[in-house]
Length: 103
Image (cartoon, rainbow, N blue to C red; front, top):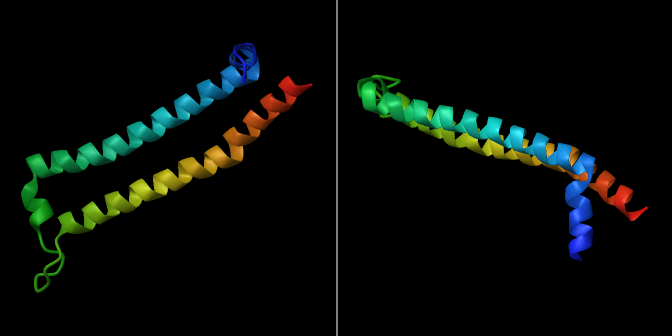
């Protein structure tokens, strides 16, 4: 790919919009994940007894274990959601830009 082609892509109005939308989307998902993660860390710091509380008095599973597992699952779901949106929305927009530039 030549420098001229790269400049055409960068200056294409649809490509600029796509980059802006993708950045906003990624920042929102990042903020969501960080909020959940730091909420958990703050709970560990300021209310550790809640996380150490057993769900069933005769069992060994605590709320902290369950919440930790849910946070891991949430991160996988968030990654899958980003991939789904990227494959179905952003990739289609990139293809439109490519077709427009190849005309």
